[in-house]
Length: 417
Ligand code: LLP
Image 1 (cartoon, rainbow, N blue to C red):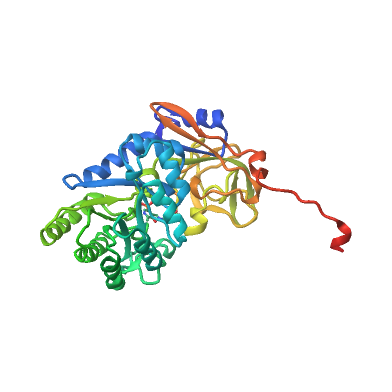
Image 2: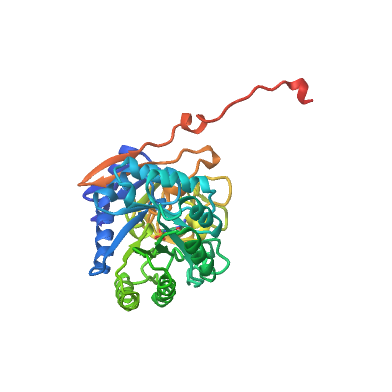
């Protein structure tokens, strides 16, 4: 979204026009931004044999998933429906990796049937897998390298000891035992760090640990470094420079390959990096109120549509697209959910009036995909801007959608008394 004179546009289309046509609240994704982020990612790792597997949990809209297919990525999935979504838009099974956690073995069997790469993250399922498939089906193992990333939220840090994710590097001997006993073929090693990697040194330390682990397996075709690359939410945010990351990783890879005596492919599973910036949640201010202490702007959205500020204290920049030059004041911008539901607290913004359209930025990743119908409100519509055209890619929920799976049973009052 960029400002042109007094208005804002995405690919030349005025934001007001998009909101009038499709209504608010509305998620809008700019396909050009996704193309740009993907090409930046690819440049950072140029010279390495690698594959990008888009982590579609970040934004699972089928048109986005199809766009990724068109742009030549693979797919990282965490559930069977995500696998099926990928297949439905044309991904080949071998382009998809299935990385569930805490699932029972039947889900893994189902994924094997669907022909995708299997990534196993606990000894219980790995043992079942080894017993059932022996050397007939390779798998990847998800390791936990026990590194603490320095994110601002423990809720998205996966690399430390307390985390539920992954097989501990201390359990490698047990993994190797399964290789010996059942002929299990481990062709990939996977890690996914904190979802907000900020410090290249910590990442590289994790990478070194992973390469050390990798050396203990003979048949590796790939090492999968997961996702977790942070993006700017505000100008002074500290984020990792992806080109530094690429450089550091290339150096470690070269050392590893020399020791290992064989080339391996690197896989990455970016979600946020590819789609966060592309998405904006547009919401209309319905009410202004002052409680004698704070100035509130009440919108037609809420944490049921973008939960990140409430769940992770995430900062999302908010632009008043209707009054960008208004006089600055301090506002608390809230949603319409019947509990504390802040998008921003005491934030300086140009004057906000009822009817103004606010743009909540960085809403592409973990925005719609974490939305719910809490308070029996409809999830918003989603629009993609592609080749200068605004296209609806998901309709707004209807009342019928809300109630369609519910069954109203009969009661006999007397028997309840
Ligand atoms: N690979 C695996 C195995 C993952 O678990 C994840 C994210 C990714 C890749 C993609 O990570 P990304 O590049 O998007 O950071 N809801 C939270 C983030 C949860 C991330 C879950 N796993 C948020 O809104 O910040």
